[in-house]
Amino acid sequence: GAVVSQHPSRVICKSGTSVKIECRSLDFQATTMFWYRQFPKQSLMLMATSNEGSKATYEQGVEKDKFLINHASLTLSTLTVTSAHPEDSSFYICSARDQGGGHQETQYFGPGTRLLVL
Amino acid sequence: EDQVTQSPEALRLQEGESSSLNCSYTVSGLRGLFWYRQDPGKGPEFLFTLYSAGEEKEKERLKATLTKKESFLHITAPKPEDSATYLCAVLGAHQKVTFGTGTKLQVIP
Image 1 (cartoon, each protein chain N blue to C red):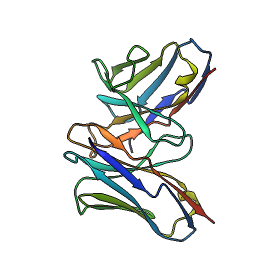
Image 2 (cartoon, chains in turn red, brown):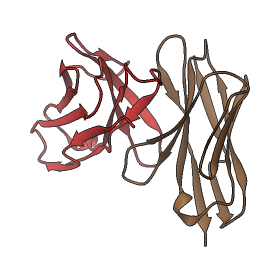
Image 3 (cartoon, rainbow over the protein chains, first blue to last red):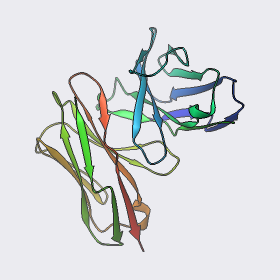
Image 4 (cartoon, one colour):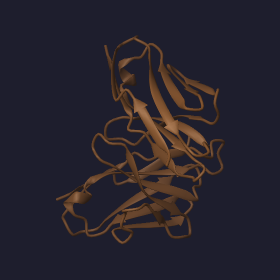
């Protein structure tokens, strides 16, 4: 099956620093990747759609200058949380669609990155 | 606006006690309905995609069914390792996936 990886799995940083999270599709190419945020005991909230070779599309209320997304290749998207603050602490999850697979509509998720901003 | 409602919010079963989880949805132009399993502190794990009413899919003790208004995830003779939160999501014509809030399943030995 399609595999998506994320790195790092956990990160602790000081307030004001920037944190980069990588999302990779390991065995398939993904022209579109998605970034989600999940608060405890809540469902996934879509932050942005990452498009290979073009600018990301952000959901309403998500600051594009705060959450920088780069989708430089068909297998890699990065999310950079700039000038992180404690309220940015959350569980960030990426997903990707296997464009060449039989289930082209299905999103496969990474294992998530737990961010704690002190 | 697409909506997904899952019930119950939480379900506690004895090992071997079969049951069903419900996912009611409204969507503009259904392109797919998805079931995922999520363990604490991990990303959702893909289970099934259903595309049209009447479709059914099975995997081990799980069976997913779909009608025009809802989907059921049937769990037959569950084991403790089936304990997790089960998420339902729909993809509409506008290409956005909408998730439900999930059903937290606990299977007691």
